[in-house]
Amino acid sequence: MAGEERRYALVTGASQGLGRCYALELARCGIDTVLVSLPDSGLNEVVIESRRLGVRCIPFEIDLCDEEALSVLCRDVNAGYPLFMLINNAGTGGTRRFASCTSDYLDRILHLNVSVPTLLTFYLLPNLQRAPEAFILNVASMAAFSPTGFKTVYPATKRFVLQFSLGLREELRGAKIAVSVVTPGPMKTNGEVTGRIERQKFFGRLGLLSPEKVARISLRGLLRRKAVILPGWSNRINGLLLLLIPIFIRIRLMSRVVARELDVPPVPTR
Image (cartoon, rainbow, N blue to C red):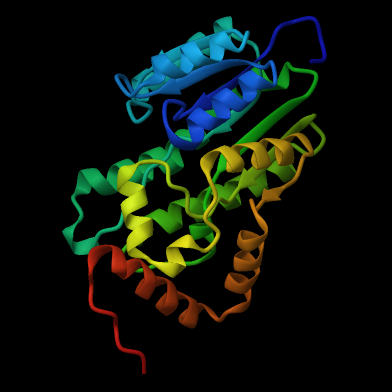
């Protein structure tokens, strides 16, 4: 790594799923990490495994939706850990009828998917700017390319991540900081997500990749300074189709597929 100062990659949502895979892939590459995840979510196991690979690994167990905790995290990281990479991976979603959602459910999706990556990037940007070369990777989703019934808020938040990343990339073009956004398709990251994917049947398996493969592909794309990273050839084809299909058809098709997760009768076409 350029420069004499030892620098870290910070990964949010690092205890499970894709975040865990980012943490371990970085460790295999000899990159020191700062890992952030919820308390009691299994982060200690990832830290132990990372350290066995010979890197420094600093854990922070906090709820990023707690604004005071997020502020303290950024203060501590800026004071003690020079960064050269930020991976905004933490996020949440789900499949529910909008009318049956609770305000807490909606607020957490909005806060974790929109406010948290925005504020983390804002607070940690001066730290990244001190590196000779720096990288920001934001995790969006293929859901960013289409509104979808029964998910409603989630695709909108991932669309924000996509647009935010591209705007920030342009703004930082001359600042030696590369901003990339990855848009994964379905990944079997835990039991709940796996169950939802299986209920979508054939369509749930379109673009399906392991989180380990998504982590490898997106880190490679990040270091190559790619703007938008669509992991896997099937997701690249899906992304193109979603852009070409008229939006009123796209919404109907996507919503019919997602409705299978709730066993909702399909809306008749006209």
